[in-house]
Image 1: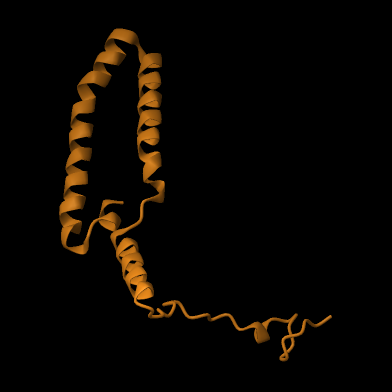
Image 2 (image 1 turned 180 degrees about the vertical axis):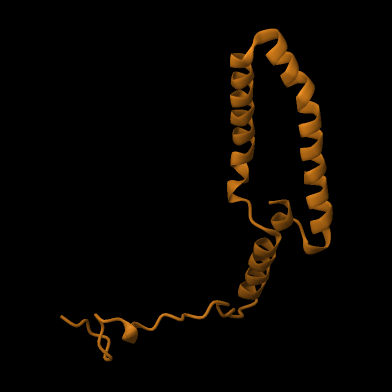
Length: 112
């Protein structure tokens, strides 16, 4: 996710930072979780892990609609071009040929 959202020049930095946070979290999770198992038992261990997963999910839900750096810069380019009165062609050509379908004739009418 970090590599897709960051600008191309900062991709390695963003990926490294996210990796560091992950390593730090994994390293610091051992002691508190071992304390939970030792003092409270395995049932509380699984409750703590379930709660942590729920909190993590809740924190990442707002990121679902986040656009990548490429998407946001393309939208900006299109907005500037449209405000200048230029037309931008769609980058994806329409490869679908209706005449290849069995239900449409060459004149565009549906076959019955």
